[in-house]
Length: 196
Image 1 (cartoon, helix red, strand yellow):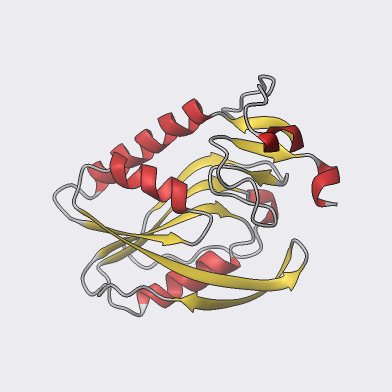
Image 2 (cartoon, rainbow, N blue to C red; image 1 turned 90 degrees about the vertical axis):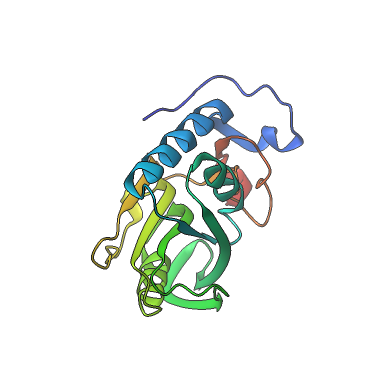
């Protein structure tokens, strides 16, 4: 799976809350470079619009944008999935839409993690109504074990996945728990006693 089980070196105060490092900063950088190269090849000669799903995708999006060799426009969208605790009810509201004109554009939704699929499916459908040339998704992590709905891509849409994710509470590199851990340069598995 590409995991690194090296001991945590305790550089950041929040390191103590990790059970283990799942993906080191070096492993993440290599994967982002690989994804950027693939997107650049797939859309060669065409500009792309990267729409980051706020707030979790901001670090991934920044690194991915620099790894893509094509002209890139960037904006953020925000969606809220309502539920209790860490469980989604499936009710999704788009709370911040893009300000960019997407007509005829190759849009790539940049997401930190695909979990149940509700939020991403709603976003892809919503963006499809803005008449883009294509709507694709680039997600750093894919937590297939929690998938409830499949993402329905319009014709020409592609899916780029960085890593499969275990069914664990993962944080770092933009992913948070209670707005903490986003700034960690790696992705780690949070100790259960932290979120229980």
